[in-house]
Image 1 (cartoon, helix red, strand yellow):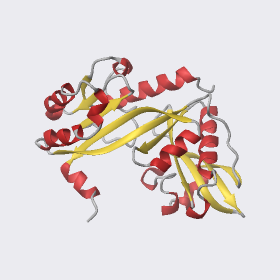
Image 2 (tube, helix red, strand yellow; image 1 turned 90 degrees about the vertical axis):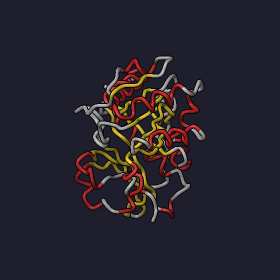
Image 3 (cartoon, rainbow, N blue to C red; image 1 turned 120 degrees about the vertical axis):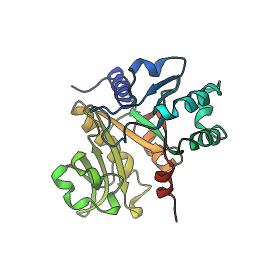
Image 4 (cartoon, helix red, strand yellow; image 1 turned 135 degrees about the horizontal axis):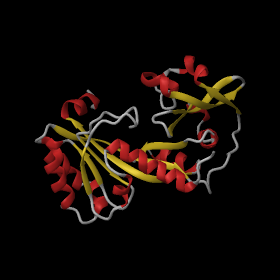
Length: 259
């Protein structure tokens, strides 16, 4: 059965609760909540658990899922900001980075997550032929051109996709990974020569509908600074739903920096 709008929101809350080791209701409180992070078999499979410091907000408050080492510093940080979204912006983030350094941590990832708006989600026209793809079709596609749609390190999670073809050649691909039991994450790539033609949104919207038809909730993630990806999410019928900020070890952050 296709999820309804209330189903979609509640599914996301339940999944975030498994990831953060809290209750779904914690995201709807007016006050901030700090909990001890713990691994859970139902958490999204790509997460590194337990968290050192993960700040999650659905807009009401902030749930901080933290290690015991970082609990005091994060609790104090959250208490300093009466306007909660300031916790996710500079100059506040500079302060968070400073207080976490004593525990060997640095601010690392910041992302916005999108859920489908069933009143806006609809099949969008694609100027090219489209085909529904399944896991066996992905075998030759784990190459850099499709690295946002597919993940070679977790290829066993890639379950469904929609490809766009020009004369038999793949020119665009949206695919999803079964990151947890109830929610499948969409990623999309379009070859440079075929961008700005509505290919990405056509593939994303069709794949989202295919996921819903299978009784799962599609979700989409973008870095806040990736405006192209954010625009695609909105054009495809998705809406901003929650945000997350991660702190990781200083050593890990260093490995991500250009040399």
